[in-house]
Image (cartoon, rainbow, N blue to C red):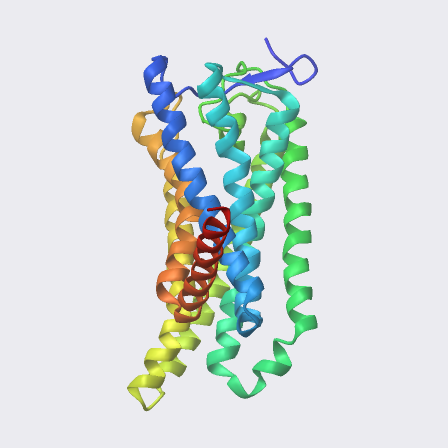
Length: 318
């Protein structure tokens, strides 16, 4: 029997016991990780170096990209390292750190998406008051509040989870430490407090989604009242990427956390979990870079400058 005083490690889910498939898993995760890393870093760099993009919309987009960078960096590297070294072990403290960081980044992600919806609401529905409402100080306060709330929320979750006694062994049916899988290992009479926190968290997340929906209902009403087709297209083009990112986040989250719970994890469950934890952070920069003309122009300029510098350096070396 295991409990929280003697537990020193957990065993994460292995994708395969076959060495060749472990190497394949490492390579696939490495490609996905590098794609997500490069995409989000390009977004951050392009916005930081382009003064025309120094406005609230792109300020919050930088925050979202930083959170996405953190999200994939919390889960993927450890899974890759385990496959490469043919092990499943994660320390008790490492598991607690994964839970804290993943919950913090996920909750802050929801907060930033909600703030971004409010930003689009003010831009479309109250354009004359936009600079006054979304001033520099207000934007920093909203972003800081989101990050601080995420830290407090995650600390509550992590503290409640690791205060439990684990009687169901130390095998986590996931490729990273996740609270629902850890609760399966908890003693049946000791996880009621964390279940209450989960219900509270679900209510908070639902509140954020309701605010996003209400914002977009008002946005669509205002856009449909714009007389010119060009004006409607411009308004929709600034909102559609954010709405796509929110939809992707909600869809993958609902699929991952509301699927029927079972004692043994199937290949489909594993695929859903991988999709939820990896795909949204990787696709978010692609969605914005493809749908927002200013981002596309900034990325082309940034890549063009890098290629020019590379060619110039090659000529100098020759």
